Length: 140
Length: 141
Image (cartoon, each protein chain N blue to C red):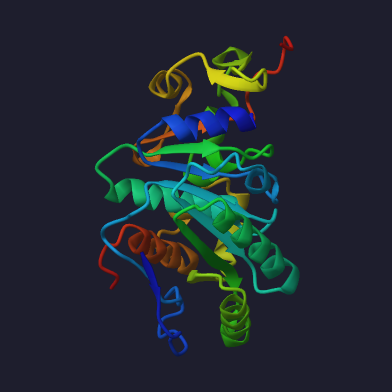
């Protein structure tokens, strides 16, 4: 499975997005080296941020051009500050933060994609802004 | 090239994604991988991001679910009935061979375009989803 992903990503030249296996293995083995952007999802607690820092380091070692962190499930300014401080210390590029949004749980229970459940949900809006950043479109 | 500027004050709007990395127009990425711990929301973000980016792109976006616990189909908006109908990618799309040094090498037996056309699942916003964990392991090679 990993080899197939590696070959597909290397050879297929059109826009691609890969939801990787959780954890460090893909990056430590370098099977994902042919992407030009890694988005590392972190949550505002230590273990998650620490894993993010390791993923960040591995991704940079693979010389992937764009390596960004996205903070998820952020609840308020304490979380924001903790994330900003940690990322600054560990040289992690924080692309943005997604607020905690309970409607995602409801969407999951209804077996709906968050975007289809509520296109104006706060998490979806934040992800939309991130998509604009990644495509360098004008952010409102 | 990315530029990191000093961080902003607290967000004005609850959904504003604070963080001040800006991408230049010249080297926009087209191939993305989403990484993170299990439970971080990685798959939800991957699926939602894919849908939103696909709407703004001219080209078709291919989404690859590389998680052994495949949930990307749901976050992409594929209904449950369709998910249960997904045909597994057969083992025959890859072939184990050896390179000139005798080391194990994996090659594709079909071109990426062919794999996408044959096994890609259509999801909303014109995305083609490839489900890797559905690779049929019957008949070890």
